[in-house]
Image 1 (cartoon, rainbow, N blue to C red):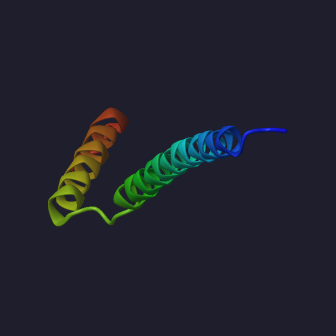
Image 2: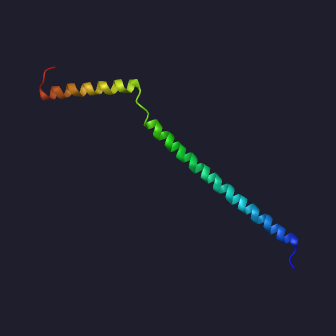
Image 3: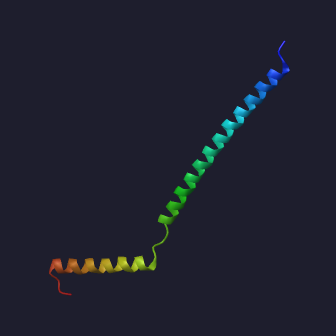
Length: 77
């Protein structure tokens, strides 16, 4: 007949191992979720509307391009 102490020791060891595996899996899951949250935050930052300074700079560059195209086409401004 088996000793109850050996059975209890094996049960506790198995339960401890299961808890360690579960905690490791949960940390990995939380890390993966944090990564996905960071990716979503980066996407929303990229999709944010441009600032006023950026729009002014783009408008200035477009005007310069129009002037250069007019000069290349030989049109007087």
